[in-house]
Amino acid sequence: MRLLLIEDNREIAGVILDYFEAFGHQLDYTADGRHGLELASEQYFDLIILDIMLPGMNGYQVCRELRKRRVTTPVLMLTARDTTDDTLQGFDEGADDYLVKPFDLKILEARVKALVRRNSPGAFSDSLVYEDLTLDLGNHSARRSDQEISLNPTCFTLLKLLISKAPDLVTREEMMYAIWGDEPPDGDALRNHIYQLRGAVDKPFKHAMITTVPKVGYRLQPAH
Image 1 (cartoon, rainbow, N blue to C red):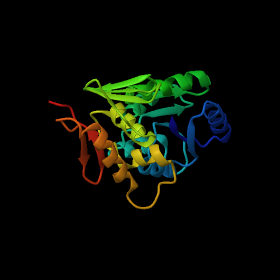
Image 2 (cartoon, rainbow, N blue to C red; image 1 turned 135 degrees about the vertical axis):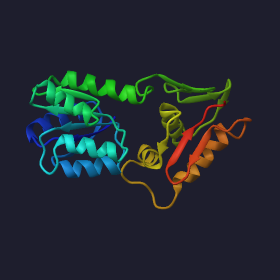
Image 3 (cartoon, rainbow, N blue to C red; image 1 turned 180 degrees about the horizontal axis):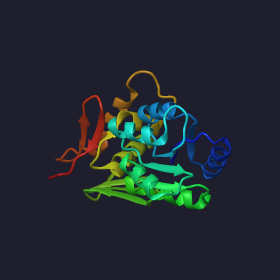
């Protein structure tokens, strides 16, 4: 998972960073609300862990502005205040879950995984299925209509992302991060990979599934 942690308590942030990175997850971190808002708006994350009491902008304001900008990344709010009004305000501003400090790191991890799974149902599955497409994550194989599809590793990664989000949109930024991380190449290399993917997934079949959303990204469309 790629997570964004927005937390101004350095000690708490350090514990969270160490815990999740030990399991191989990638975390970006900031202690400032405004900086967190910009990171969350401009980059792809599987989930945002957001403290409420922050400098610059508080967590409620950050979450509200994210939803205004149509950023749908799941948000898990952290707070030291355990009151009904605080909890309800967090949900009203667009948060997906709420955890009161101090908390058990295993509980935090379970909440994070549950939210990511809810947002991307195939995130922790051994296989992904959409319409007549099946992706086996264990042996990196793909099939459509019982016909095997040959995919290179990059195309496999792109198809995995498309199926896990289908039929919702996958942005170009999400795709580029999935392939190249924080160092995408110059030019429009992504378009070339999409061309290759279409050649494998759509060209041999009557119905084309990969659809372009101009200037935004791509999605899989159903046969009917």
